[in-house]
Length: 247
Ligand SMILES: [Mg+2]
Image (cartoon, rainbow, N blue to C red; front, side):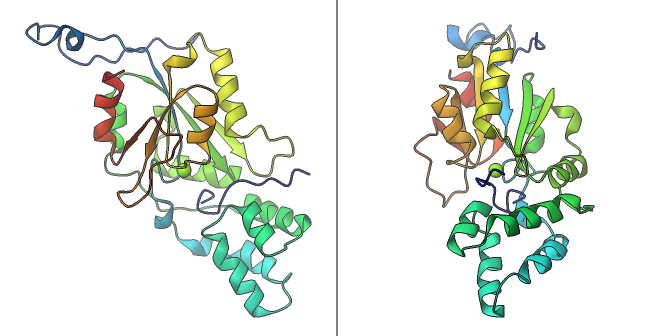
């Protein structure tokens, strides 16, 4: 069983030709490079904290699995400490910090997977800006499959993407986001310089994208430090169009 679970509960926590038309062709008084730039790009987009705020989820939906895991700990205090970390750190880090055996983590993930999720979540207010760009989008998200699918369905974003990939933390042969990106690029008629990775996590999709030589855009909160692997950062998707147009 693979023990490298890389998602926090927070993360739990011949393609279509698309052209991004920047300006109206009649604007001929604009500098040459702004007149009409045919941008054939594919955006590979993350879900958690990129398209919606994971902290807006009701935590009680995870309680059955958490209460089950609580039984493993010798004291209430040890359990509380580990459980607090579940909301902040990737599950493999929680396991390491609190010496939780792999079998316990695997049980926990299996219990999360078997849950029937009812969610009340909405995309970020600026999400619709993404759909105004005439460009192909692919969703790649890490987590518990049933939960990620419930999120996508509740957000009502399924049809906005030509493909949806889930990097399942319970998968015994995970290729992680990097492997998924690599496969997408290889199977596409697009060249690697035509892909943009858009996400919030500097150590996940942004790093993977950089390592594969793809362009990266980090969505970050104003107080968050920019990832060294991000080519660009933005706070809202209103900033996306100018970034794509600049390349
Ligand atoms: Mg994310």
